[in-house]
Image (cartoon, rainbow, N blue to C red):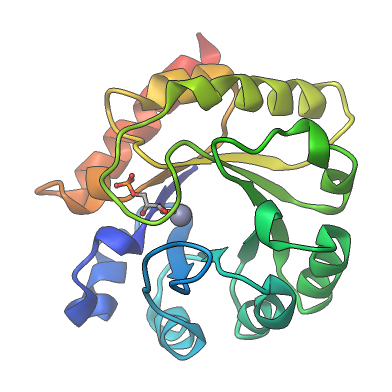
Length: 218
Ligand code: DX5
Ligand code: ZN
């Protein structure tokens, strides 16, 4: 699945920008609070407005402190998947429970330097694992291939039945990097600049999807 990141869209034309990626699977929305990450984007009222016009399900990536307080609200307004950062949670299981109770899939994100081992137990309560392939905060950064062993490990845990979740990668995904990520076992690919920076986002989505599919079966 391809999830274009709205972070690289034109924020003055959000409704039109959602239409330009209508062929994608999820619309990735990066919520940043200027505390957990050194950048500030948008919050619940704007995400609610996006949800009202988006042709595809919302994948909300909360790069915020105190996700316990805010995450369920994104599920309540109809987001399809709500992901919180492992590094920001005191009780990841409780957050997952609250997100699911509010009607969304629950995701757990890990920064490049955060080991997966610490979270394997709690991941049984999640639907999505988001492996960051850049340091969270900004679009347009370079893919960190050193993170791929975590993707491989997660895929192995899913394939052996220990976990049941989507393995999502986010950051620096483009035509040059998506195949490595797919071969390592990711099945959801966030792409910001590679989609919104393309002349034809629909074409870019189709091309990325084809590359990922080929690398997965290969
Ligand atoms: C970074 C965000 C990403 C970002 C990806 O903190 O989580 O979703 O938009 O942008 P690209 O694809 O340009 O690296
Ligand atoms: Zn993101």
